Length: 151
Image (cartoon, rainbow, N blue to C red; front, side):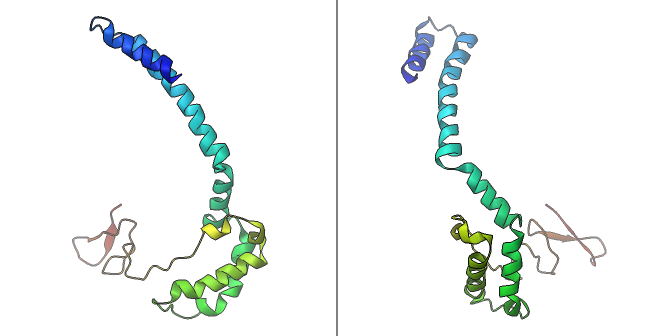
């Protein structure tokens, strides 16, 4: 396939400087088609895209309700007090692992790819005046009392 495409592109260069758009598009398409097929096989089959998407749905979109119910039960004591910034992630790792063992996450090979992160209150998502913003920027209105976010 690559040899045929290379030959077609060389013919384009030799044909007296005339550019034939149809021949060029056919050459590009003859390259694109097998590359796209191979890439599709690599991503969908070899890399198991569907199982990774199912894991994202389960853990990021709360699709595994039993896992999160177990996690909240395991972490109840930690969630009832303010977090300690220095150890928050490590503190939550144990209940997260326990929830994985006691729920449907026990058989999921992708569970080890997920972890909880602690973002302190002065994160990029919060402006200095305490208003949440998806972009981290907050602008006061003319009165200076309310804030509106810009995304």
